[in-house]
Image (cartoon, rainbow, N blue to C red):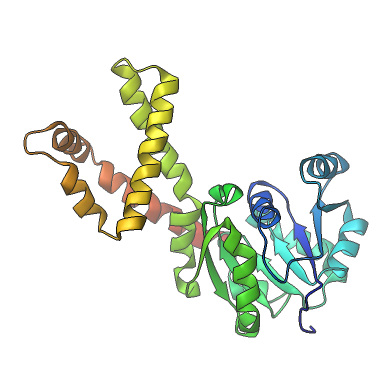
Length: 274
């Protein structure tokens, strides 16, 4: 593979939830060098037309023949399909592969497994808030892809924040970063349900719960304090907060969430073995 210059093409294979989240983040950002072309590959004309109507600055492709051409014309491939479709899709387009930089968004698939298709591999785990520029991305690189670290971080940085991680930590990152939004949303639903049960209208409870979680996250990020210290500062002796926390601890909320992350990480590991 020759060096990637200022004029380069990105082809996205799989434009579902995560593929479009990263696409949206890139389209809403401004960095240099910026891709001159972005081609989104799908499996049907209908989905290609939907993408084209949603995102005006892209090209679309569907069907094996067009997708092979799109891959052949690319300098960078973003793999955004479901993990269990990866091998099938890559086999379909293998005629177009020529050791491009491969950025994988797939849970469970290791650098070694992906090096079957290119020696230049970046394994990235991000999440759905990336679509709004407030996501998180963890990045591991194959040895040959180290030369593209700056470009990879520029491409995934617009999701919100991007950091390097050793690959051994990527399954844990998949559980925390990738699955984390769903865990947070379950907690948000619970806050809303409790407020509604005590008489708050749903719309007000939803907005309040969302702002509570947003503000709490900002407080952790801005202060750098341990969450336990910030939590303790809210607890007045004999007050409402400590009473509510004790009820949650009695019901195993803390261990339930922690074990949920653990189970998600175990499943992420198993995905790469199928």
